[in-house]
Length: 415
Length: 83
Image (cartoon, rainbow over all chains, first blue to last red; front, top):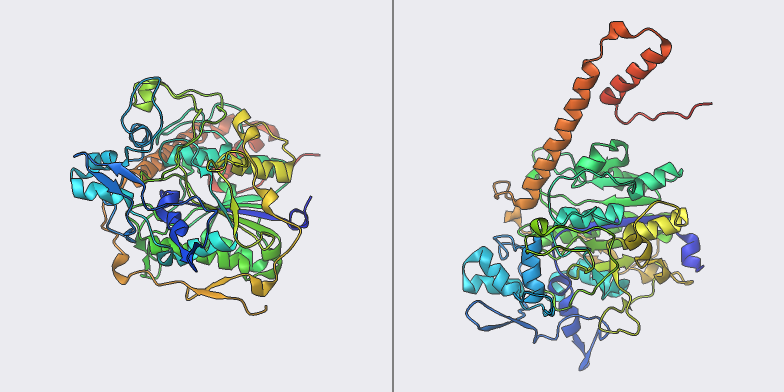
């Protein structure tokens, strides 16, 4: 076991909303320094990736992503839409994933050819100083995929249970199988775990099966900040950003910070920075915590990496539920999302290889979250799916060497 | 704490706040999930209200009833382990 793992006492997961890897971090691959690529190991964009539009024109990726108002209406990210994005409209058994259906699918939302091109937009790194700084200062995953080629609720279920219990959509469902959430596992074994939602006006997305049945595992983001200051953070924490714009209790303005289109991406940057700083500015906590920043799914936005096959979780969604006319056996991952692991025990510039390096590929998905937490704190002792048991864990990235305090960034201008 | 490199985070655009923005599918799904949880909660409360307290005879009966009501009124309460 590394010294970093020996020191680890807390795992914190911040799950943002609906942005693809290439959209947020793909521009890092185009940064040059002294005539060479500055980040050659990051599997981002070359600038030549493209999709056809509904008129047959070729639409290249464009470095013109905006913080807001560009992806309105919300890009499609439900199961049939993501199927079109991945397979480009091919049907049948022999089809091959080609990531050629994003523009066509966004046209179904916009009914406007020019606006459908916006789905190919990406941020230049200077626009996202928080996410790109964390990605280049700590560890970025080239191969972290959403668990299902579908929307939020089922993907978030994988982060809590290691399965969505056969769900591929947003419907209400009840858990009938004896697979406890990672929070139940922790608490039943005498450990500590919490879900921190932003505030009561934003609340949680983990409602029927967790908020209703286990309200004791919830707290607010203000309490997270307080727990960081007081050194009372649980062993495992899951943070939810603010999901809507609403008035504050003092009459101020609370902005959505989840980065779900069409919420302001810059506000999400500030939320990520605030969460990082809360851990970073308590020295004991900083040295004993691993912070994972990850997105639940790609939100319908372009990414060039074909999602790989995966171990089924034993469930099957019926053709009537998938909306594609064929069932889904949970044997293919969803589209790639940004994922960054932060700790002073991680060397600067760590890039975890993905499918671009088949010999060394390390593929992650949201079942890796309960899988890692359960293996680390509970030595794997819990009832869970085969999918979660086989999901790759991410704590091996913590090394024997801790970086000095002045070797780690801090974010400013947040008040 | 020793000096560290400070990364300045830009402010969000002042005009970004818009509580009148139409709610998307995720937020509407959230309301449906919350309503379902509330209905489930109310059904449980109705079940507790349906208990005739005159039917409670023993300390065991009373403790079971008190637990049900307390769970409704104070859901964060912790059940201690027995001897």
